[in-house]
Length: 74
Image (cartoon, rainbow, N blue to C red):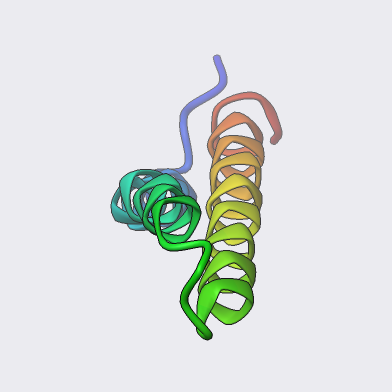
């Protein structure tokens, strides 16, 4: 019978938990940038929000991959 690797599972859960604040922070920053399009910092704030969203997506997929490998790999 196969058993779950608890250390690897914990590592995957940490990745997913680390992405949770970024999931909410990225769209909030993008929304703030679109509300202030006439300001000089519009483009840097928009780019920062997009980068945070990309990082959140990467962390989610990496965390899910690690969790699945902990459950199904030997």
